[in-house]
Image (cartoon, rainbow, N blue to C red; front, side, top):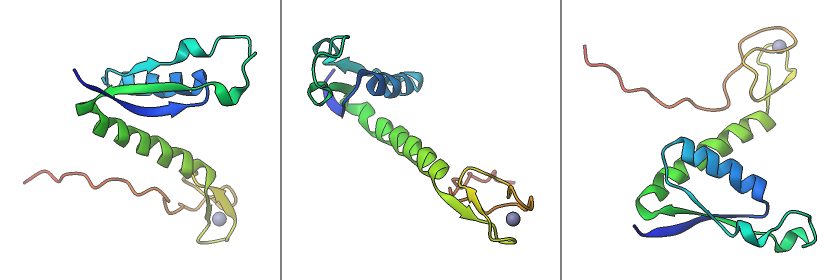
Length: 117
Ligand SMILES: [Zn+2]
């Protein structure tokens, strides 16, 4: 099985987090380079790197998962202005904290396939 390098991370923690996400979606992710960053922190963090490798045919799905993850993070850092009272709300809020009105969702939900009647 041919593997390609999917991503490079500065910290083992970050790499493990993403590896866990990919593995949880049935991708056969492989973590490389971990042994080069021993615990103890004697090496400056800039020299620590961890790579994630995926089989070539799973890279597409891996990218999709990464994009979803980034969209989630972006949504939680963005603010949404309330259409009624103009208060700013965190992007992951569904209701205005001030007046309770429904907020427009900043993340577009994917169109679902309609069942043929
Ligand atoms: Zn409001």
